[in-house]
Length: 260
Image (cartoon, rainbow, N blue to C red):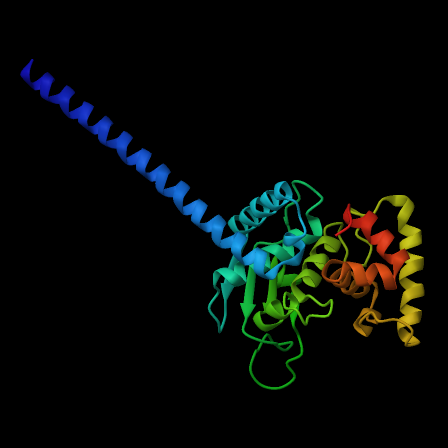
């Protein structure tokens, strides 16, 4: 009986200690999460105008979405350290285009590599012919994205002038979800708007070529780049984009679900 009493006492103490440890662990996690949320919201308030323009409920949802993204997608630095600012800006770039599509997840992305600066076709960030700011991987690089840290930060600066490399690359990923990167994101664009969108793309490309548009000439590369370039402009400088390109603005509003 004495042995059983000691055994019972030992089990009871173990249960109590486990309960206390579990409770403290939950409290620590909650505190850590709250601290992380405060860090994220501080960064968003300072750098991300899209977030600043949201109401309180949508800001909370935006925070939740970037937290989920950072949980699901690995971010690593090559030649540079990845800090919280980098992580939040990357996650914001991912969430902004799909914010009005609840539950959207980037199933075609598992890893993001952050380089310190521009890189070349051999993925080198030192030496000559470095003019690439970001790219979505194909073939053996499928599921990967490479971003330039300097370009990432520039996209969220006051002097970005409507360009945002990271948003550009995430729009390519969205476009890619239907099987082809062709400038027609069928998962976002309702069928009745496909033909009008194609016509509008080509009409605007003619204006860019003739020097009668303020859209970056890089949009002339092909339809996929046109979509990515105008999406940067649409999200980064919505008022200016609406004033200069009202028809494009209206169609992109339909495509992305809501005015930015």
